[in-house]
Image 1 (tube, helix red, strand yellow):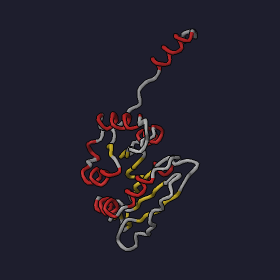
Image 2: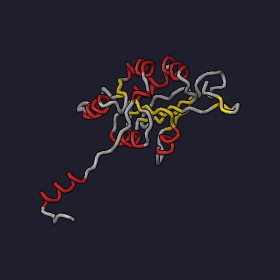
Image 3: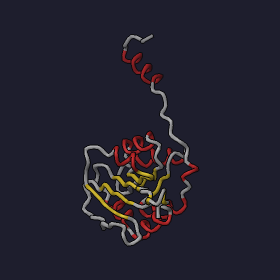
Image 4: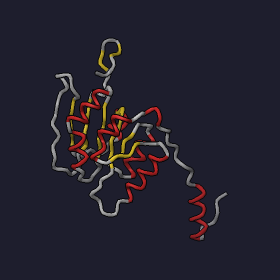
Length: 179
């Protein structure tokens, strides 16, 4: 699938990351045929899954049979290159992964881990989804989110200026104000 440019198939990578956690529910759903077929229908060519501490092993595929190519790995010293080369990122709800992806301007679907007890991460993901910076999903709704997403409707994320907060904290701690 991926559009051909000068006769060469353009690679469109979906990068799935669970960070350093174990989030087999996300890895399994990303690896399910229904999700892979939907990604392929939408023009993606490759699925790369960073599976962290999980025990579920996705099914590798070269994509030579006219389907999505699938590969996976556990950890990397830095995922920034994978994020940069991705056309779409599907991530756990860790704030580091979310903000790193948004700052690179990549379309993002955040999948909330419902097995976590005090899930403050879902609040962050839901707030950013409400502001239209990303899509928020659960493992059971990932296919539906992919099928209905309109990446053109996402609003680029612009980090705020933390200077006023830093000045307030410095003043509170008794540090002299900088000019």
